[in-house]
Length: 386
Image (cartoon, rainbow, N blue to C red):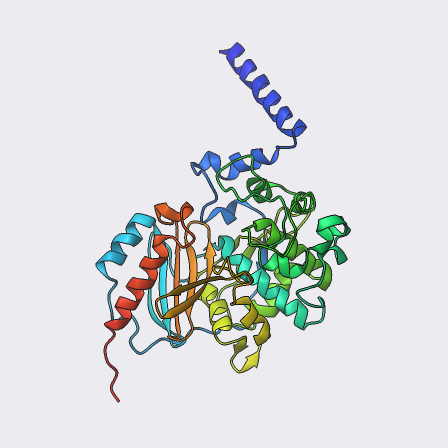
């Protein structure tokens, strides 16, 4: 037994040494925070395992409650889908009032869970804010203005608008389940800026869409450099407090020492506070009569940049369904804020899984279920008295 323990200790020491030598020591953090807990990828409450910065709220503004609040039950199909995909929150907001809400699996209206890539919409919004505040000239501002690492060759053509619209042309490859992917490294590395500044521009920027979390992360770094503010502070002053968020939230950072937010993901908040950003875009940047974000920027954000990729604008997903046009915030494992402005409807779903087809089509089947069943519920709303 003593020999076995000694050999095991030596094996572990060698393995750790190899990880450091090969610059893959981030995997130690991955094992400690995710894999050793039985997960194969990030999970809803993993923010508890990482360093976080606080996004403050000082004047909470509760959502109005609709007169038909929770008067209609969830459809059987929706109940079954919630069970099979591990939904933790499902909320329907109609005419800017909470029409229906339910929570599951021990979560409630104030429970925090990971936004994952819904955070990308906030970062794009902060770009619009930085432009209107005069920190960044326009969507055509070169990234190389802020980071000389991207000021030569093809990289010199890359603009902040390219980052927001996922058209940077970098060599980032989006893979969530591979331990050795740059996506995984970015999630666990304690020096995220070093990872991002190592990216190479291999295709001409601004020509086509390719989903890339690295684009959003680099955009966040540009915004911090331009404003001189930490992104979590800029989010606090620009949106979180002005929109009356009810709960203080957290934004994961790479480490206490480097203090760089994981901008492409990882805002820990709740369904109704996430929904506020959807309402802001629905209302063309106004909140309580005040112009919080430029309406022209919002209109551009909700318009496809590339005709061959109509599913994406600047930080937002776009989908036409019959006679309806939806825009949405989307995140890993099925985090959604789905907005139909003409009907004045916002649908929020948070949970543990997407539908199995998530990797085979642009808009997975679960999105259809959450939309279609919400509209069935709305169609059964009691008629109000004149």
